[in-house]
Length: 83
Image (tube, rainbow, N blue to C red):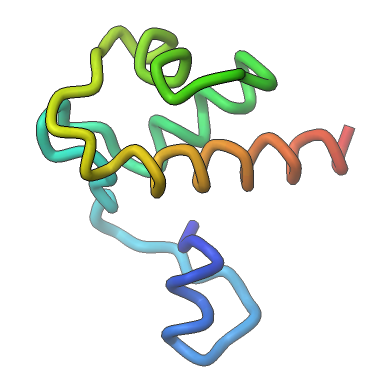
């Protein structure tokens, strides 16, 4: 599912499913899908390091941190609203 930023860029308010994984972290090969699945399984986190640890990784360069947190919190909020 596309992020909110991607949906705004595409000019749509409907989620767009991609056939290819959208990589958030190149250093650890973490896709949006993996981060979203982690949010659904693990619930709220306090720090970006918690997201990476839940996925069995560690932050490397840090360029993805803000986007990884945004994707995680977006999915956690969506999951909480559906529960």
